[in-house]
Length: 295
Image 1 (cartoon, one colour):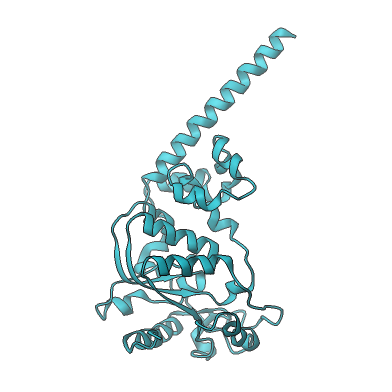
Image 2: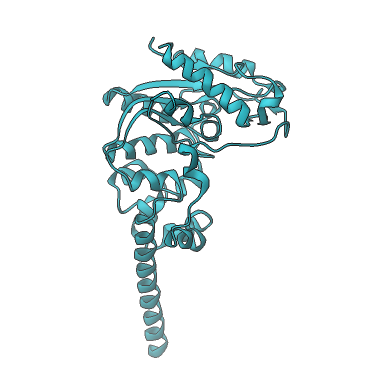
């Protein structure tokens, strides 16, 4: 019996040691990586200056062509992340400021994310390698149910989020394999037209959003001009009621839902293709240059 107990104890010590070593190795790899996603990009950079930072979900990532602003002499970057909710966007903004970013204007797509106060498990997972590195990330997630497990159990956060930050992603980061997330100044172009050209938002209703309120407070504190917008949907989307009611909750949101409507400009009902994104960004650019967002 004593030998069995000793064997189990040794096994537990080996497992714990292995978990610690793997945790340290994985984290070291991610801390040296800067080419896989926008969170890495921000973590690995300092002192960036932008006239305009585009932020939000895929409806920012696929809709805002930063180069059109850059061609007009306006420094810009698209920090939109596919699947991101406003909670993850708020954290990304905090990290930018932690890294001493200087941002004059943020154009933030809020539209469908105002339907709830939910978060994105997939995007949240990509913050986990930096949990021990950044006090900002720890503070953001300190009320999370799994917080103590993630912080104090070695390698737990990598096992829990294996699909996003497991061995495959760690290996790609180790060999510095680039992803397309950082190409085209963060804009990801969609091609084709006419797929899934209907969407029902009739059950959606805009609500007070904790993360959006936090973003507003951060921008006010740091003298960042926040421009909140709603971006276009396809013609067959039952969205007018939802989008029109956004301003009853947040009057400051600029509604661009119907600024681009022709199906030829959409890859799917909620995401514009290259032509649609170019047209839409041009509309936003002209309004920006003409100071229509100053009120």
